[in-house]
Length: 130
Image 1 (cartoon, rainbow, N blue to C red):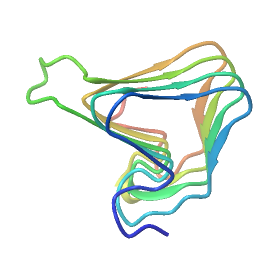
Image 2: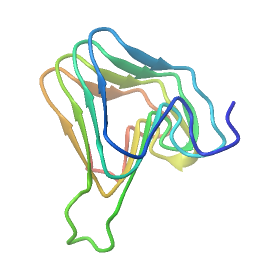
Image 3: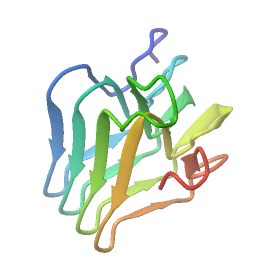
Image 4: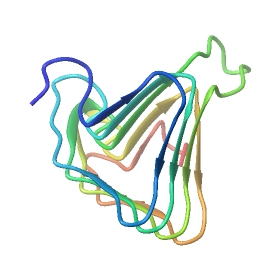
């Protein structure tokens, strides 16, 4: 259990590429981003049968995204891309938003047979972001 802001992986520069059957599982933090916390810039790319599952955080049980945006017209500064048969499932946001993904200032793209399902209390916050 992390008392800080990060659960499994914290990204503040560069990118995270999950491939094959890689997984980020069972991380718990009192902060945000149980599986992955990504801020300001950067990218997360999931491919193969990668999974983010069973993580827990205040916001963004699976992935917490906080880009550098100051108004709704600003373009996203972070991208999260799910390809192939990747999954974000069974994660929990204890503060009530973003069980799967909490994204402000990020672009979330689902391709192929990828899925975000069975997260509590919701799969994506704000609604319609993924």
